[in-house]
Length: 435
Image 1 (cartoon, rainbow, N blue to C red):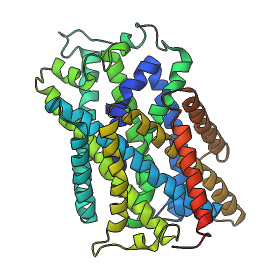
Image 2: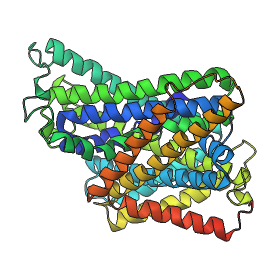
Image 3: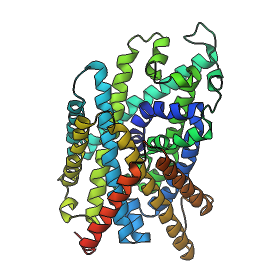
C-alpha cells in the first residue's frame, strides 16, 4: 500500500515538473512544497479518519455519496477518474520525452503508445502481478532518490566529489536571493507543486482490498505522507544547494550531474532508466485507480452496471479497458501537439485533484459533525478540525486562483468546469437511476 501511493505520487512531478517550478520560484520552491505538504497532511488525515471508519471500495467517492448525497459521489468519482486519465497522459508524454535521449528523432507518440500498451497489459493481469510490478517500479526510484539525498548531503557537508571542499548551502541565497522572483513566484509554482502531490490519496482506494484495514490503514496514512514530503523536500534541498537555481534543467538533469561528479560516468543512462520507470510506475498506478474508481462507481449505480464485473482473479477488466480507450487521446495529442501536451495535462489534472481534495475536506466536516452527534468513537482523528479543514480549503482555492492568473494553466479552468457541467447534464438526463 505504501509503495502503491509512493509509486503513483513520485513521478514526472519531481523529475520533469520540478525544474519548471524552480524557474518560477527559485530556492523558495521549498516554501511552496512545505505549504502544499501541510495542506496534504490535513487532507490525508481527514481521508484516513473516514477510511478507517468505512474501509470500502471507492473510498472518498463512497464517503461523499454517503454524507453529501449521491450527486456529490457521482461527480467526485468521475472527476477522479478523469484526473488519472489526464495524469496518465502526462506520464506517457514524459516517457516519450525521456526515450528521445536514447532514440533521438523518433516520433514521441510511438513511445507513448508503447507505454500505454505495456501498463495496460500489467493491469489486465492479476492484482498480485500488478503489485509486484509496482513494488519494483516504486523501489527503483525510491532507492535513487535516497541515493541522491545521501550523496548530495556528503557533497554539501564533506566535499565529496568536490576535492574535499564542502559545497555548503550558499547556492540557496547567492543568485538573486532565496526568493528571487518574490512571493509571486512562489504562488505561480503552486500548480506544479500540487500536481507533484497528486496520487497520495490513492491509499484510500486500496481500503476495500486491504487485509486487516484497522491495523494497516493507520500505518499507511501516517508513513506515506512523511516519506513523500521527505523525498520531495529532501531531494530539492540537495539539488538547490548543489547548483544555482537558474541553471537547474538548463545544463542537464541535476540528478545526472550529481552522480557524474561522483565518478558515475554512466549516470545519464542510469538516471534516464530510473525516470522512465518513475513515469511508468505512476501511469501503472493511475490505470489501477481509474479501473477501481469506475468499478466502484458502477457498484454504487453511478456508472453502467457493465463495469461492475470482474475477472475470475478479481480484476475489473471492463473498467480498465474503457480507461485505456480514453487514454488513447493522449497518444493522439502527442502526435498533434507534442510541445504543449505536458503543460495542458498537468494543469487539468491539478484542477481535478483540487476538486477531489476539496470534496474530501467537505465530506469530513459532515462526517465529523454526525459522528460527534451520534457519540461515535473516532479512532484516527484529524487534529484541530474544523479549523484545519477550512485552512486547507482556503489554500486549495488559492491554488485555483493562481491557475486562473497564469496563462499556461488557465486552460484547466475551462476544461475542468466544462467536464463537471457535462457530468451534471448526463446525471440529470439519466434521471438519477442506477446503471
